[in-house]
Length: 494
Image 1: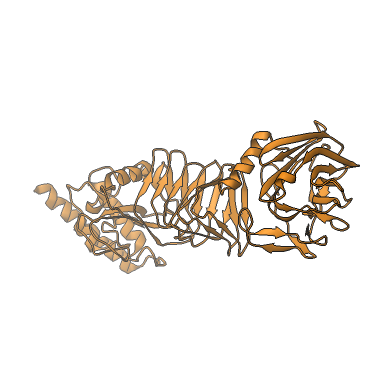
Image 2: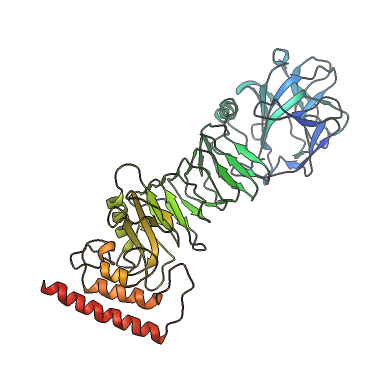
């Protein structure tokens, strides 16, 4: 149920012999086998919203028109009016009823069997109603508009006959008279197995949006825990209606997800999709470590990926690309790039340097808003001094680790200790060799940052609760500082 820019959800009741059956145009269908069969929303659906003129669009697919000689209703109001019906005693003549019956003069006998779409656009400003069959206009009639809401689909509540034996893919756009082009798009979207690109999709617990491997663009995505999106091999593009939403369900499959528009999409579920994530507009918030799946990640210019600061974990992806003026805020997340082609170290380092901004970490690029005093993002290229595991994950020489850690943690194991101090080199140019301020060289500034990280950490791992400073800490820092001064003198004399 769409008010022009978003969607609303209504619960409804199957009455009489009405039932949900398989074999619909897009999955299941509403079966209406007898005069008692009708689907009634528990709350009437408004047609007139926030104005004095009726502007609305109703659309439904139908199969097997009812051959009764009585009036047969597709949409019903409490007064017994209907925006679409087959008139009594006329075979399959299409019309409506609003302060009296009106006939289009169009006979639908050629469309009595097989799935077809009927769309009715009500425009009180123009004082007419236009009927579309399978996306094409077939009739326009002048009439009045006596009802403000619908309370039945497929029939009226009592005393009527169903329009057809089955209906499916019912859309109601209240306060919006669709244009001819939009009606055609609505028709094409079902034939192509997709929804209109501006659709606001809201998924309830236990329900699934199944792309069946198709590519789909929608306006927005929202859903509670227990809801699902099944991509299979398809791609889902979200965000064209610029509405902030949260999806707490699970996105699965080998397909991909793309975020567009200027609003914020929050992914809060344990997603398992593997085809990759692209953020091309607005902000995508990942509320847990698996929120963006396990595929390649791309943040395009002007867009932002934000990991919530409420968790600390390790994300492993095959590639992680942040374009110029794009931002990836890792929060407390560690990132392992397990690349299979060319080494992305240089581009990744450049992105970190772009965000560093003299330690303020407020530039575009790869950064973290969770950093406190003595903390930083470190980068470790496992081609150099290859470790068998990075962040507790089995590794070889084709991995890069970006670590939420302490200043001075040269080997990116989360702890500042003598192993890190030993790795510092006066000729170093990387984090691994002591360049802790990302200026391409190692000097007294880097030794100072090392000491700051050592003092703030107190020897604790970054992933644990920080201990209070103690006399032991003061002694340890003093020892490291003395060692640092001796090491600098030796290196400068060589």
